[in-house]
Length: 333
Image (cartoon, rainbow, N blue to C red; front, side, top):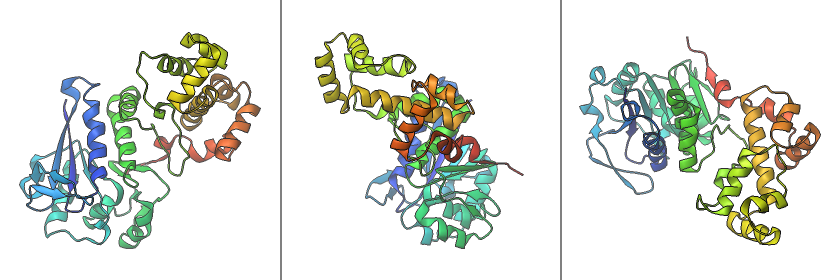
């Protein structure tokens, strides 16, 4: 069944609040059957067909909100985008009543960045748990005193309500929603296409080996990267990797550093750290197993590297960032 995603925009909207989620769901259509993909609709507040973003970009809306009958438009997901001036902005009469009705008719609804203020003024955040841009968190608490605002979260789910932190966090939320619909593999495929990190947690230091500079898939450097990611627990010394690339040790080290902009050893360590991050965030495997499967050899070595890179031990990292998707879910009524 095709899912319809609606994005609510207004004059002064943050362009990335709109284009980020749109690109996630549009890219997802590459990886799912055509009858299970997404249709994306941009709905405008006001009557103008063109909406100017805060950066000057003009967005062409598909429909004005007044032309959308909430009783006939059950969206799979509707998201209110944010913008620099939205916390102080008051929309035209009827917009908030319409938003309240259309969200009630939709399967899921939410906001990107400070789009939460639109939901708050529509009465949709009372006694709920949400997040927003950290800079607007206190203003949202003041506007909606019964709302629990978690400013340190990248995104929060409270029943059928989904809210995200500032700007690019809308991509993280969209990837999470995509994983709900089609599984982690599809979401990871889209994240790789967009060169973003899966399951980013609020305040978390991030690295992903997918964010190294692009290399042609058939190049020796790309093949070495793929080999590293598939053999983290094995010997990944420079001599082994030079053999994978079918190059001399010296030539391989020079070319890899030039194309990847890091040494082979730095890439291997970063890949292992990233894999350990994922295991610590998303499971309860013993540290000894995490260290072995990610190629650190023993927990002591892993601890030293985590302390050097993040300033915390693996235990502290897990306590802070474990299962961000699950921990961000607030039980519904």
